[in-house]
Length: 78
Image (cartoon, rainbow, N blue to C red; front, side, top):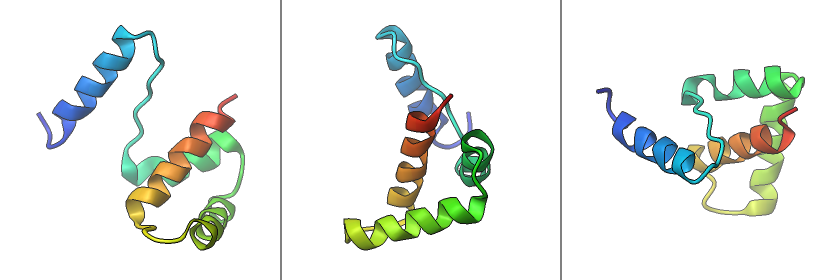
């Protein structure tokens, strides 16, 4: 089992057990998926995430950026 897959499977299983929809997106595919599903250019999404950094303050690492993009995907899902 690939590194980290155990925890992802546990979260998916817990969500499934509670009737919560869960979708996995690879980190390397996150911005591309967001651009496709939200119908925005990837550069626009990256720019908006960078703008969030200024208002959110520190810490604002790759984890926070990815979580924000994932949140946009969930909220903007059609």
